[in-house]
Amino acid sequence: MRHVVLKSTLAGALVLSAAAPAVLAHDALDESGLQKGERIVFSNEELATLGEAKNEGTGKVSSLQEAASVQIEKINGDAQNNTADVYAHKGFAYLGTHTAGGANGGVRVFDMKDPSNPVEVAAFAHDDVPGTWQEKVIVKSVNTPEFKGDLAVVSVQQRNRNADTAGGFLLYDVTDPYSPEKLGFYEVYDNTAGTHELYLATQGNRALVFASNPYADYYSHGEEKDFQIIDVTDPANPEKLWEFDPRDLAEVNDSFNGYHWNAPDGKTRAVFNHSVITDNNAQYAYVSMWDLGTVIFDVRDPENPVYLGRTDFSSEQQGSAHSAALARGGNVLIETREVYVPVRAGYEESYGYTRIFDVKDKSNPKLLSEFKTDLTEKVEDGTTFANTVHDPKVQGNTLYLSHYAGGVYMVDISDPANPEQIGQYVPDQGDVWGVFVDRNYVLASDMGQGLKVLVRGNGQNNGGNTRTE
Image 1 (cartoon, rainbow, N blue to C red):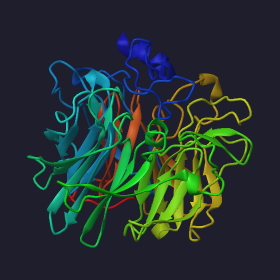
Image 2 (cartoon, one colour):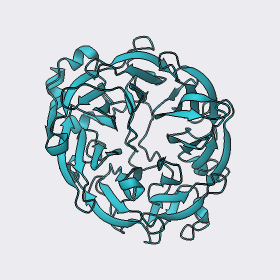
Image 3 (spheres, rainbow, N blue to C red):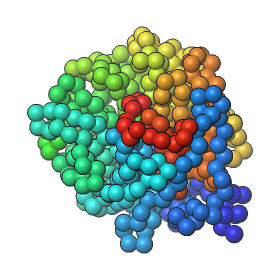
């Protein structure tokens, strides 16, 4: 009966009960109070009772098919953790975890040699800082004077920001994915949750982490900032190089309190750093600063980044610049907006959708198009994460969007001014957080169901990693 009941209340199932712990929306200071962390989490046995996934595709994605669906193992007694973001590197999948099961689920490593049978082979970052969750993981091959191998950086966020611990990010050697080894820990201001999302990039023989620390500015009264660049060339001794103060922008005056911004459109808007990526060569950083838009920096000199420009919103649009991806060699920017309260006075009635920009001139991003899904305008569903877009990934001319209850949408962006939906994958009762595209498979992380694997053609994979940011 559980299966039937949940299917009839999908949007409601994605909202927490009043008894759940206080892990709030990405905008944790938002007045909606909507919680995001613990959804319904299925066991492997329960997964077997779910219906078949919806899987539609034409053209370049017509051959994608679900090859595997597997829940992560229990590592904290009887507690079942749930998954957050997903990454792949050299034939292994890395799944971050959220807050279900008491958090401290760490990062789970899956051997993807056989995509139809992913095997969980290791867990790490789960027993370093009590009372935390490890959402985001990035893995890169690094060659510096102090470290040569595969380096993983993992976000660490406190469930209680006033606890006697600190958030930030962990650094692990995963050259042998079966035996990860801790190298270092970077702590942010201890009265904020920690690092929410991050990115790892290299410049020559130097390794850098670009960290998003929401509300560090607000809670530290300006002493620490939300966006920081950390040198991890020596992973055992991370060192902060630079941080961004939004007050340096002409349009953000001294009344900014680290969170509230009196925008030029006359509205009071939220400003905090949610996410960041760089281009392939770590020349430019794209920083998702919620209602300030996607802020673009020249970071070729990471001690002295140069502000170039930012995306903007019309007066009737809620901002909520959540995540970004690049296409066309870095000349096209994909910006996703996580809007989960669709009806607010003075704004359009809509959940979050995707915007596509021409950023050849990074000082003047030009809006090319907006992509909405069938869920975008279902405002009658009320305040929920179920209907908003979440994260973007790009491979070639195909955009993959994780979309919670909408699963994964696949969009042809051959003409960025006219994006066209060409496919959709939705697990039964799906709640898809992240998506990652490798050579011959697409990975999706479902918060309640674990790892999903979509394969192309005959399902064979070469085990290598293709950069898709």
